[in-house]
Image (cartoon, rainbow, N blue to C red; front, side, top):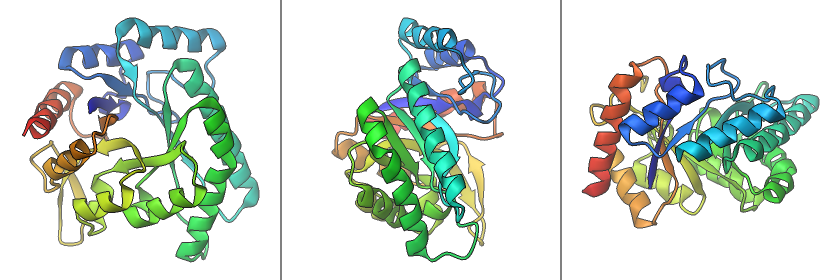
Length: 266
């Protein structure tokens, strides 16, 4: 099991500064968030020489690009929009290849009109199916996050299983199924065998299940259980910290990795 953090923890940091944080605090990887105007600069607009330079920065430092996180969503009633997003995914697969990462994160999104659960699952699984051959050809994992309409692990898992391709996987955001009143064990049972990447961020809930971010171990989410379950299946991927507008990097990054490693060593 390896540790990374997303650029939301330091959106004003250059890529070199992100790598520096990783080296300073003992992370093996970083996760640039594209399409969010972060300063790391890893975007589709990068020229080939820029892409080569980025790949060399990772290679020279020994810090991996754990995942390239995108904003792509597929759930739309508009077939043209869905086609645009599947083509956009292929462009991000190309970018992932060029900078040397093995995976990208995508969202299912939510219905933009009246749709049943089955309609949403069928739309998103069809889109993922349309890109699956390209993902496999390029050996890049496309990871559907347990987020938004797909926060429930059973819905996300069903969608990925329909595609039935080894390069269409799950990004288990451990918080979101828990927010939907699923236990960590229940979520894991649905996702086991599909998990390629994980996002972590702790939180405290109010009576309406709205969440306020908390430093790892100071919230309500039993990450110790999640890590134990992942360790039991010999999960070799990343736990990537995703804290949006929460604390300075020098606060959250050393704290999170210390607590997560404590859970891993229990």
